[in-house]
Length: 360
Image (cartoon, rainbow, N blue to C red):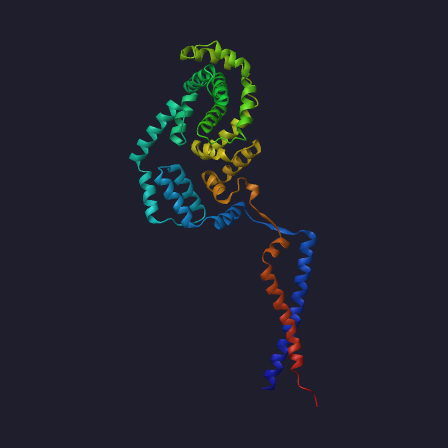
């Protein structure tokens, strides 16, 4: 019995000393972290997943997929499904069956054929197939001539017209001529021009970014001279309109527009035309365009879903670097419990002292 009591007393004293040592090390460690700013980093993917986990549950992702399928918006459904895969969320079997049906060959062929034709003729669409049609019509100058005639007629008759679409169509004809002359060197800018026109038509171009693009376009085409040329041209004669503005387009100065169009072409390469148009609503400045482009290069088609769910439209908005003292502060309750436990361990010595029998 006496041996057991001696062992317990010894253990109390050991715990007391250990608690004092750990408390001292904790205080020194916190002081060092505070004064040196020591920290650590995590991969950007982990940071994004952490924010997504807080913003979107598997149930929410499933609801968004089903809502997109209900609207026959396959691109939207695909995007949210990719977000779900990124988060390792398992979607219900019924949802996956509906996705398979939406991507069935017969449904895809009918839908894409109709959308491509509509985009080629009108230049208006927000689906990949429709936008492919719109871009194709611009690459053959059919779309540019159509838009010059349409917007030019509105200008001549005093109606509200889009100076941006008009100017970009003239630039587009000029770029087409340059593309032929350089063996394809202007394709990148041409694709970007078509995407901006589509974004303007579908309302995805922000009111903040539109004036910047309009100014760059007006400078490129010499808008006062362009208006005079429109007045002197019979826009009902599309063949003559093409000839006049092909000649005019060779003199455009598109150097200021090319960087923007190149970035849009990069977006298109990363996520396709439909997602590029939808992502334009996050672009209010050229810097925002850089941010969105960087996001898509890292996360591809998932990018818009990440932005919409987290409210963050740039990689730098996700916290990947942490100062150790900040990380500790976020877990302040855990720190308090740790220190309290150490103090309790130190008090174990006091318990032994108070319980020590008096010597005779």
